[in-house]
Length: 290
Image 1 (cartoon, rainbow, N blue to C red):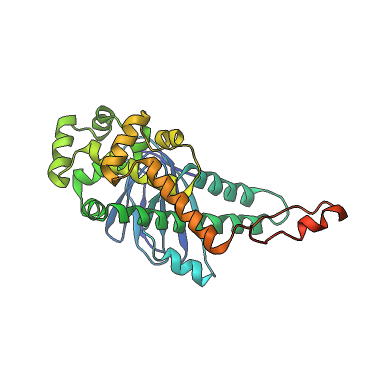
Image 2: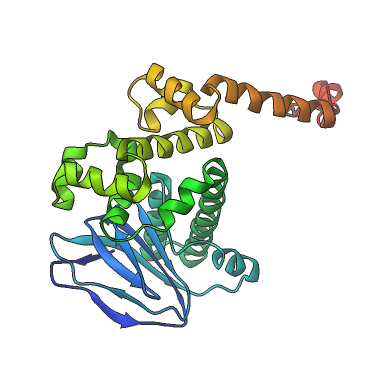
């Protein structure tokens, strides 16, 4: 765990090992192979061997991060990590898992390094999986994602801020204060660069997250509404229908239909516990389709 205070940074350099940063608090700017990357809580930065990188001097406050340096002997994992972008926004579970790596490494328990290696490998595959899910969401709005990737300067800062805060009840006034610009000026700059408002962009990000949750979880729709940044279930359904062409319930029903057709094709498998000789007949059915 490292703290970088005001006027501290890291000179440009490279090395032969992998390095993973996870930002826990504060903000800063890093440059990797001439690409400037804003740093803020929840953002992971993966630096591949041989890539030049630099952490610019911290302008205010303290930037705190978890810093892991490691080698990889697994060719499959190495190849997959080479496909993902150097930075991804990760969920709270990633921080918890990465903290466990640190705790294991510092402990005096048997097999601590083995456990730390296993947990770190899980972290790395989580990065790969997050990228795959983000690519799925890009399929929903490919032109939007391409447009956002071309942004630079202040419009890039606005997009990064929205990506960081869209689930938290985005406040344009707070954004203006933190980016030290007038609110109306920020709205004008973003609209000119993207041909859409900041609120509309935030809603696209919220709906992308909601679609992922509907596809990959069994959460209640009210919880998905709240987790994706909406405060009103009716407004959530309205925006969802406007952007995707379906209501949240219709999409979930479609997912359930896909699972139902899989069951028809492959069978539903029943697994029972073996509790003793009297249950031999039942336990022998385990794995047989209904």
